[in-house]
Image (tube, rainbow, N blue to C red; front, side):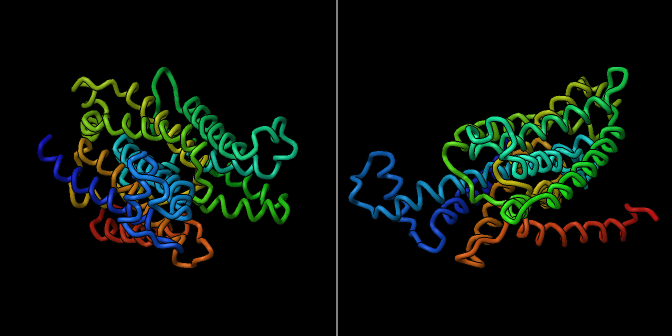
Amino acid sequence: MRARRPWLLALGIVLGLTLVTALGVGPRSISPAQLMRVIGVELGLQPPESVSRVDRVVITQLRAPRAILGALVGAVLAVAGASLQGLFRNPLADPGLIGVTTGAAAAAATGIVFAGLIPFGAQLGPYLVPVFAFVGALLTTLTVAAIARQDGHTRTATLLLAGIALAALAGALIGLLVYLSDDQQLRDLQFWMMGSLGGAEWRSLAIVGPILLLLCILLSRGGADLNCILLGEREAQYLGVDVERLKRRMIWCIAAGVGAAVSLAGSIGFVGLVVPHLLRLSLGPDHRLLLPASALLGGTLLLVADLAARTWAAPSELPIGIMTSLVGGPFLLWLVVRDRSRGVIGD
């Protein structure tokens, strides 16, 4: 435990510094001293007149919910990717592997295109698309789990194949919805499908934020069991691990976490693939360290990507999915070439 603390402390400090940077950098620059005064006003430690009203609004209403959401979404996606890679013993596993991300995206696209025809659509208002995304993730997980479960056991190969098939069907549905959408719906679809933290607000964050944090904690506590899984499922059972229960618990936590993340931030790829690999190269394969470290570095990476997305083309904003893909795509190609040269990938 003591050997893990310095790494986690260092990653926590980096995340904290990145969070402060995300709060201060933008079209209106806010220094750390001004930021501390705004925080003091919000906590009632300083009089309101000690800070600019504009600075206070920018921090509390625009950047703070966005930064907190980015840190939580990045943490969930990264720890979900690390958990899947350990559970399936596949270093290229990703939250999209079992179709959850695409299923949530297809449901959200349905909500965007058919918002006017959906009962209670007007009452749901801004919560319509997040609700649809979350329900889509859960329905996809239910379907995949039902297909993969046979004789009381969850077959990993069947789970992966069912996830790939459902992801293909969901992708086809998204293509059909793009064809049926009008100009405004098409713009909304394109921006949402590429991911964005621009819709972050305290109301939705108050609901989804605790869920994301709880799921990060639950997934991070499975490191010892995943270390046993690396030896093989039968060997893990001999060591006292209830493999079936572990699979169900982790898959459901991953589905809920990814669904909640996608419901607010849209589709953001490669975080769950890149972060665990970077940490595994430097920290080793011990999941007791890898899982919490992935959560911290995942939050940091997504905050950096969002900071770049909203500043590089200011006053316009790039979709955050573009930034993560610019990093993740070349990284994945490098992994393939490296494993090919080592003979890990056969002919």
